[in-house]
Image 1: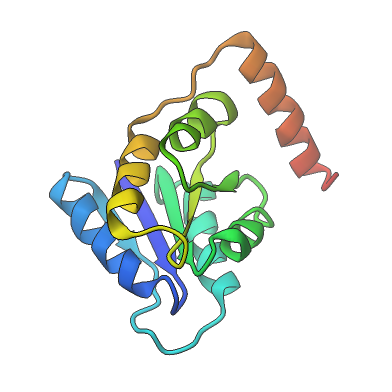
Image 2: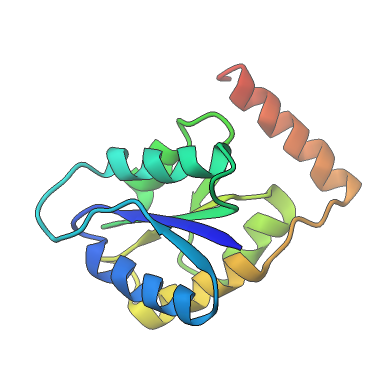
Length: 149
């Protein structure tokens, strides 16, 4: 599986830890930056991750900022991206199984590296259920996205 990952300056240290963990697990990683703790704008990196996923350059994406909120909001502006801020194990897999989430957003100032890697693992190991009720709901979400509400 190809995983694209990006972060702003607040998320940079956690991004580096996640990259090492994902590579150890055997994932192909695509790092779209940033490359330091120098201040940058989170929308640039969130959009780069979401665009890579939507374009098929990666199977799933991860964005990291201070809270996860801004990066998730920015990623969701890219048509075809489905992002959520996740800070717990259940939501990490449930958002994929029920909602086909393709961009995970994490808050580096909210959770630590151990929790972040557990969440990333749950997200990356999960698969969309394909159950009729979830497919029906996903079609409605995709339609909202396509028409921008």
